[in-house]
Length: 550
Image (cartoon, rainbow, N blue to C red; front, side):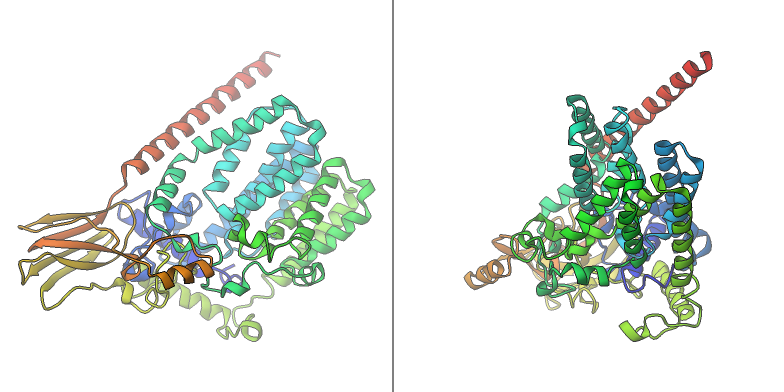
């Protein structure tokens, strides 16, 4: 689990966990910035990716200071949650404990790249299917379950949410004859409630997006992969040959062979899988029209088929003949054990030939543990890569984000003296002395996000942190247009770092504080959750009392 995903974003997500640990240690339980990135310059990843599933792993790291153990606890959490939601879903649909148990056993083995962001939503997929199913098939119109699932999806991984939204729309279209006004209203109520349950995240996200143009706003961005490599489509044959989870495609073929023995829901899940598989190929205009649509956030079309194993095995476990279901589950378990735990032995280097990663698995884990501890204690000296720089400014120099430039002061040393610099968690302090009567700019070793505040003392006087811009030249505008960058008239200077203008010598303290919008958003989200939880508890006790009387 700590080595099989090293070809994906394992270090990035591990840094999210360790960064949250650092925040908790400093009594910041709802952080806006992660200082393990960018040599302590502060990366706004918590404002764009929810942290709710990382709190237990973060506490594990605080107790043990072992990064791989913290990540293992995250994997355990995903595995346990996936097993629980899988059992609940299939049992509610079929009423069979055996079928539910089989799916609960096999589901955690289906999406095994735990360093890949999309895997984090695995426990929510069965619940999403059931939440839609109960409205369409059972006429149970209570919108709460679907609302909670959607809210958690949004605050876990946005791209996964888009993929599952597309899948859900297709699933609903399969059942269009079952739709009524009341059912449509139930779905709308779910979306509205989900928005209220996500207001803290949504307010924060859009406030930051409106405050500057981020690199992620350039959908066909050229880093870490060249633009030409994005949204390229392949033939269906190539997609099948290179699919992440080949065993699932074999089971898909088996399901198609036994299609007549499956019930309507299972058939629809199989048809959904086939449609997504076909749509991920060159049959759709991915390299023309779709490449320039909002779907470009996928970066590669095979994101559409990442969740297929859940759909396929759920279809089998719901209604395939029990002997066939048991056999398929057993084969998948054997395949999983051979391809994962048994394959990744301590002294093997599984990715040496294909990716040139020659370190043994045990050394990979030792290095990760050492790096996690060092970065936790001193992120200025030991840092993690941001993976794709998505939430740095559009004008960022990617090399500067990696060579230490981005966490340095910049100022005119002939006219300004900066001394007594102190850096800590969400704290930057220094004394500044002007050698001129004119105001002087100081570029801070902090990436600017809305919420940074400067405090001046000991006679110091100056401006609040902001990004300095310069206008784009005519040639630069043409280059932006040709590269299909966002339409802007200016570019950020100094990689989007915070800049202050000093008027008088004195002491300066820089810190990040939650904005009014953020506070309002999280308060509304908290109130919404309290209302929903209260409603669920009251409904539960009323239902229990009615059944008790009966």
